[in-house]
Image (cartoon, rainbow, N blue to C red):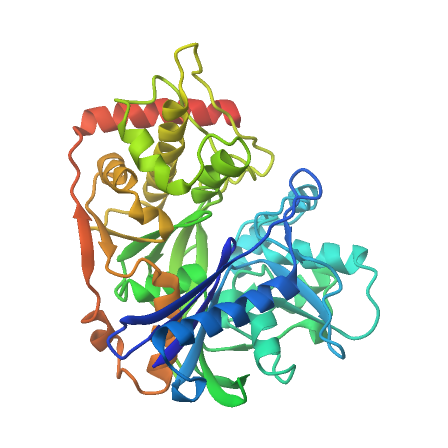
Length: 474
């Protein structure tokens, strides 16, 4: 049995899984986000850590499993979110700056885009960790010897009682501080952002025993680490070049496996490390990052009070024939791929006196499908099917509309928490639960498959109307 820790933006989910990747026990804790200024998004690193402990206890209890029965731990995490803490005390010197945060947008406009694109595969955007860390070093007022990490490094530090400061290749590749070939900290970029090398964690493979955690007095190997989207790609058994998945959570992320070469620099999609298995070369992926997907539904609930729960949205969307001409451009934290416009703001055009909340809710869901098509087209991607996971895949209306708009079948696996399963799979490979990717692929199962039903001309017409709405937001 393996413990998978999935530390996400909205909360932490822990799973206990067996050798068939079946979930035996589950624990979940929600997290609080703070918005101290427009465009700023922060979380409490200590709350993140406590959520992991609580969700772990709940998962073990649900599975009736003791910590001593676990063979390994796999960790996956919200990427780019930046934590800075004191090495001596382990005390965070400032709240975690979340990946959605836009406070460094002006700084990003001044960066050498071509250099960053060529070396890191990324684009200068406040999404990534480097400018967040630069800001922290300038504003946190910290004293003493410090350590930087994305959330995976913070959790490994805490799980090992401060004995290990490390990250994996997939998370390192999201910092804008590491090169793609080889995957290593880049000295010129460190100088550009004023980051001392001593602050940085060691970079390790995604699958391999890298540390020893202590849970309930029991030592357990930490054997898998990956950023959440790379973990989902692994869990969806997208092991061959050209295979793709889309994860729908707070944001939405389309990743395509592109093999053991990162490929040429791209204009509007990212090149990133997918994973690295111990003793092997890194695998790479193309990625389109959509900043707001489920976050739009959360805003409808918490910001506007239009719904009481996300589960209501499917029935509301299907209660009307369309959006009544309404579009929802969810640029609540700017727009990601393919626009990369941190200054963009949300927009709901097409409102009339006949507009009801059902139209707005439906438009919010449809925006997720439209954004996904934007990314798929930018990638030049024509997959045989798009494997989808994340909490929003429970919404059958959205999944069918996604298949209709993108024009390919959408497959949803039996376990929607693919990020957690990816962490478990990476850890299990490292300790011999499975021998190779082929054995893992044989365990992938689809719970639902949505075939395109909409006429292509109509899908194109709807998508073109969406593009006009986005142009207004830009």
